[in-house]
Image (tube, rainbow, N blue to C red; front, side, top):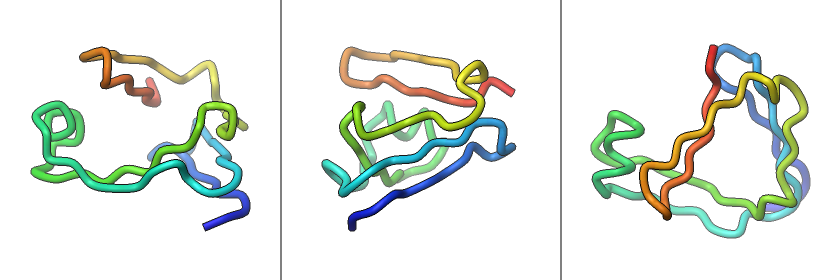
Amino acid sequence: MTGAHIGTCFCGAVAIAAAGAPLEMGYCHCGSCRSYSGAPVTTFTLWRVEKVTVTRGAAFLGRFAKTDMSHRRFCTL
């Protein structure tokens, strides 16, 4: 998986671009991920922070850190 990967939040106010291959991909069913996603299992793709660019709507990004290992960003709209 190489090249540019783009995505938006559900409402489209925030857009991101991730360059290159992801650092890690997987799934999780820990209590933190279940609580955040509202699902019994969630999937994830991780990129190094320097490989991800917010291309639209940075002012609408919220941040939540439930634990030292669980830092989440989300659209506030």
